Length: 544
Image (cartoon, rainbow, N blue to C red; front, side, top):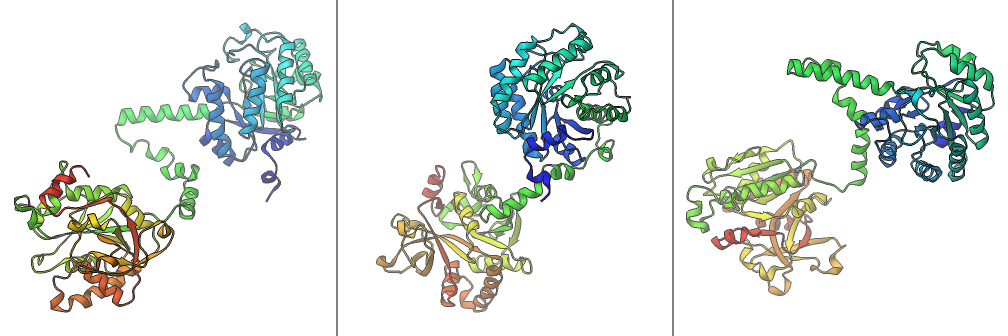
């Protein structure tokens, strides 16, 4: 760990200010530009009032409130490890405002503030500067003292910006004010000039000597060789607004090219790739953090929806379409199922079709057809689905094409680590009409407060379990890990090799897994699903 990482930002800036060599800091106006400045190798940032106000689209006349500036600074500070010197205009008010500003800057890790001796609201120095009035010198000294008294970090710096040259007062007034501000506690003096030559600031430095560090902003006298500043013993040079100006020039050129060409080919090779934006945003860190902190989610999870049967119990509603395409609230049941999966991030959805398969045609789904749907059962459809994934097994949730459910169901299944997980509704006494053949279950523990943090597993299931042993009804959901999906695929092939099992259902599979002592994890719930088994269910589904 190097010294810069150990030092506070305020100490880093203080070291730059007191350095024996000429130091440079560069303008930034938001988190992105601040990070670019840091990556370029600068050891400090100038949070320019002109640039911050301009990127908000307002004038540099305190039209952006100090709290809006503060919020922008927070993003800049969070994005970087180097110190920030704020262009604090006139301190946003009197001594009281100055003290509150210092406290808020320190809270956000800002290292220093520069205030100028003009009146609030300020006007940019390069807009008729000679017509702008200076602040009362003693009042400004009080503002400096108030700021120094308010700081809690002894390394926090207050830089006093002298505007005497800007306002046409000359060298004597500049020196008089600089000395007063130095005596009031300013940690450095920023001497400003609007001339295209450095004569004023050089004259000031010769007279000022080394009483305290002197900072300059050579925006107007930009042709002056930097060695001149070194030879005269200046402490710090601020490149004050060039990041913003460069961005504006590029954006204007890009906008014109897009308007004229009406295509992206004209500019794509001249702009940063999207991947560079992601890098500057540190998107990789977020992805790593998601792996570390988020519960196991739906990423990498697929779904299989078994929807091959007609649904004879719905009569005329399923003459021209299977039950999964019967409309509820204006959309097919399958549409609601897909929406619930999509809501938790499951996009890879495979639907097994059979009866009137041409009617099952929702977009963005994968379809497998069971042409023998009338002579086979659920396990045959599931086997066909898993066979299509052979060699590319992933965590998979299996559900029925006629069961509506809340997104809580797949979300909870995705978060479980066990290889084989089912959902059980413990309110089974009110769910008998929805129980599929063999759907009642006995578990290692009934649903209760004691079971909340316990791991519950399936003991047995069937349609003829004694009432005293029933802990709930299986809801038709089965989650298999990628490893379990591969194993279950082999078990299915063994089961279906027996012609007597051609019409076997998923409870048959679960019973076989129990017989082989394969653990089946149980998650309890009360409600959150609806099995469409009758016309009354279709009506009830409208309120689900």
